[in-house]
Image 1 (tube, helix red, strand yellow):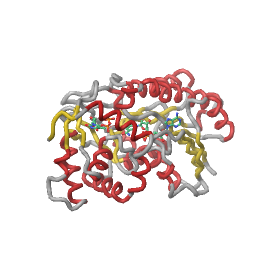
Image 2 (cartoon, rainbow, N blue to C red; image 1 turned 90 degrees about the horizontal axis):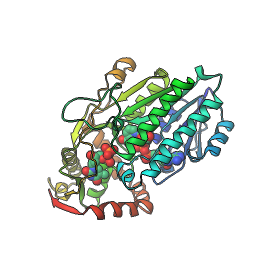
Image 3 (cartoon, protein in one colour; image 1 turned 135 degrees about the vertical axis):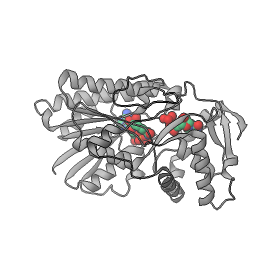
Image 4 (tube, rainbow, N blue to C red; image 1 turned 120 degrees about the horizontal axis):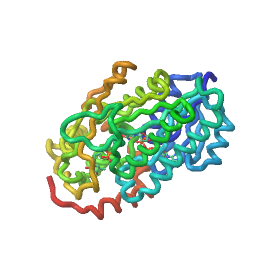
Length: 357
Ligand code: NAD
Ligand code: TYD
């Protein structure tokens, strides 16, 4: 094997797309997927590649230093792509400590292990930390986030990711650890846990359940298809420069309410429903506390330096996503149970419905 790569959080939404891409594209790499399998981690995401010779799954927790050290002792990692995290803003509002623990402490454990094990060999190694545009805070109607934007996180989730980004860069500055950071906008696509807006709406429309829109639905997000993010991660891992940051975005801003209406139209077509049927499910519920108004990325740097661009239009990506969720009933059934079902009730009972569309 030419290189051994550790991917953390590889059983989650984005991680599973990255693992699949690397396992299939680089047969001479050994890909070690390390994941705790929280409610968001699901090995069904990787059923198609789990028997490949260049793939190995290890169930472990990044907050457990002893486990991390054992893993680094067992494998000689040439690179790390770190995605493991608690990732949902609403959960971070309910339970911030889980986010501090996993996102900050877990990242520091990996940094310490890499710093120790890679001593004397930094030139051949890469520690690639996957982060979010939410660390930059909230934009007004104008302007974009770039690699130079000052951090201004406003939720426990984004504050925990910002802390981990700072620590990653501090290890570069202080110890010379070869780190790369990327900050990406909202992802969507197959395998996303249906607590996030798009899969939640698809699942609810499919089951004729209300679609909860926070506040007036005026908040804006910049959406990127997950496969395009995975391609960017591949490029950055192989061609990015240590110490650098890359902002990744879809150049695709949507108000939540407009996005939901588009999704309703696609679902009407898919389910052969009369036009306008799914829209009737929209309800407006109490807004998220501290809800960031707008995120938008200027991805000029990665476009120019690494020749990366999104490959799909939003309509193409959403169609693929809808098709995937409709074709994967069993996957949805399995994830919408147990822990998630309890969480869902807790979130939406306390919000209540304010009024219909
Ligand atoms: P996800 O919640 O779907 O997956 C997270 C994965 O991490 C899960 O498989 C989970 O089991 C694992 N995990 C959680 N805690 C762990 C621990 N203590 N030890 C080991 N594994 C653990 O998240 P996602 O949407 O795939 O996001 C992946 C990464 O990308 C995160 O770091 C997130 O901050 C970042 N990101 C996400 C988006 C987005 O829109 N989803 C956008 C930009 C950046
Ligand atoms: P989400 O998918 O949670 O991503 P993030 O908060 O990380 O951007 O939410 C996307 C947008 O959709 C955000 O503005 C909050 C909103 N939203 C709703 O209106 N209703 C919902 O049920 C959810 C989960 C989100």
